Every structure is written in C-alpha cells, then in structure tokens.
Length: 171
Image 1: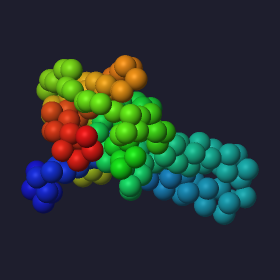
Image 2: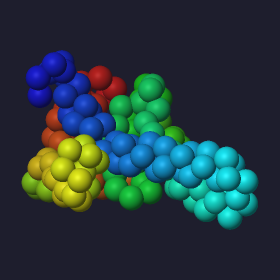
Image 3: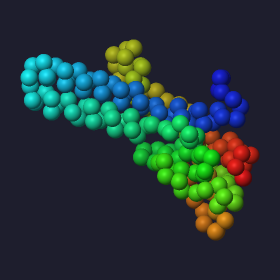
C-alpha cells in the first residue's frame, strides 16, 4: 500500500473496504434533496413524502459506514464492525474487551476473500451498474481474556498483521 506507514496499512485497507458504500449514501441524499426541492417548488405533498425515504436511506448508509476517528478498523460485515483503540477492542463503537483484561491474541483462520460492491464511480462514468471487487486476506482472530473467556472477532482484514500490531502496541 503506497502512502501508508508500514505499521498502519492493514487498517487503511480495512477502512477502504468498510467504507466502500459511502458514495451511495451521498448519492441517495442528493437525489432525495432534489426530489424535495422540486416537490416544494410544485407544492406537492406527495413529492415531499416520496423524497423522505431517499434522504433517510442515504443517512442510514452513511451512519452504517462511518468509522470513529479515534479507532482503527480491523474488519466486519453487515451491521457488525470491529475496531481497536487505546482502551481495547470495540464492536460497533461498544467496548467489548479492555487491553488490561486481554492475555493473548491469536489468528484462528486466514484466507483470501473477494469483496464485491456496486461501484458508484463506475456507474457515473459509464451509466451502467458496475460491480467491482477487492481481494483481501480475511480471517478470524481469537482474543483470550485473563478470566478464561475467549472472544472470536470474525471478518478481520489482514488478521496476521493486526495481531502483530496488537501484540507490539498493547500487550
């Protein structure tokens, strides 16, 4: 990965994969705002109501793909996203394990995975729906807690590098 430090490139790759759909969120909001402006100009209550799902849908897409600035993304799919920060490991911005409670972190599985997505950039350039993909290493890491419990963190992007970083920085 050009332009990123050797230590942080797995997190930048995860950030790129997890925020892939943000363009669609902005697109939906712009379409909804356009419909809303036209409806207000025409004094159409039906148009105003018709614009609201576009704006709400765009907001939900942006909300689901947002990443807090103080956390490093490590992976996730659907509604579950995992992050690490100075306090510990987070799932959807909720702290699930503090570093003081973690005794070890290990990679359980690792494999190559192709993540497909609809490319807004390709759609705007060609006028057709374009499906694109990223190939990343993906896997599961297991977090061992001092009280004997374990937490499996699925869909971690570049899990070996994430585990090395966590061991070096936090354990």
